[in-house]
Image 1: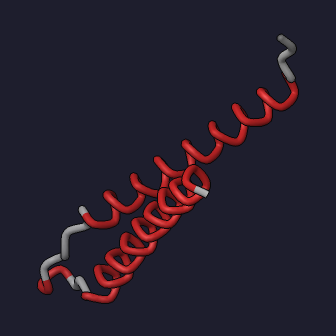
Image 2: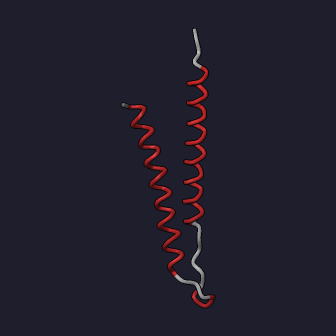
Image 3: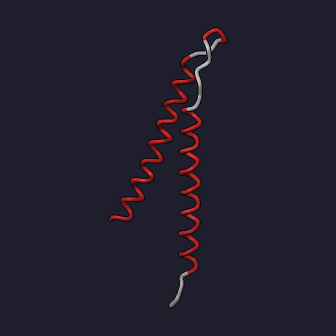
Length: 76
């Protein structure tokens, strides 16, 4: 049995980078959703809250797309 170490290292590296990116996007989504609105008395506006929520949805959509692509690669 002969192991192609270069291919194994390449798969390991790509898997590590994709895993860290996926966890990072999910974490950013959770942090963005946890942003609380500031009271109007302190000069808070709803614009930053909407931007944070939209960013969270984008992060979660990227996570879902990465998972769906991984399942596609396994099945195809």
